[in-house]
Image (cartoon, rainbow, N blue to C red):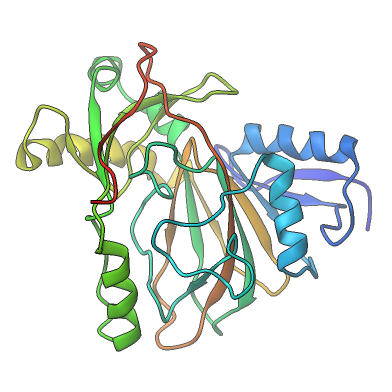
Length: 286
């Protein structure tokens, strides 16, 4: 491959990295360049990578310690840190930030193509820092003071299949509720980001009914087309996104065709708001 190169794929988010073989040990110098690009572009895309679960785990480890196990989702046999994202199990066709209903959401997520449909199944990633920057000043001041309750008892679409219902039931068997600042300060870049997504169901001190219009308005700035990247999967593709300042959406437009990605996540930290206050647990796995 040619030398290391980063090519922007959009004006506000996303870059494709070339000249890196994830199937071999990555040098410290290249790892630093990847992490720097990760912070700048929020989501990185890699093509033509012939790697397995072990090498995906090694790649994810460049960004920090790996998440040991998802609290509800099934994992790959013999690899508890690898989650098969299988369209037969569930379809996450809603904007969300991974496990934001826990006190310590993941730092980032890597996805690797395993089985792809003949069409559809793209992944969208949105820049929540750009969404915050786009807010009118008056709305930004309001957002800075708001807190939202994130829960796993939120958007869980029904597939209408026995396997899909089993996965949905497992996801909902315990209830998690965590209060996070609506504006999260990125712990490395210092950027303020709208920390919402589909698991954010109501605002602290408000009813669900009164909260919904406010959340929807704020969300609309995150998912503006100019703040999103859309990735059409090919065999050998790998991506990694910064879970602290992005949301993502799996497009459910591939019918009954199989679609499997392998997911490995990186441990994060407790979100902090503009006032320095940290997130707190309301209910945990009850």
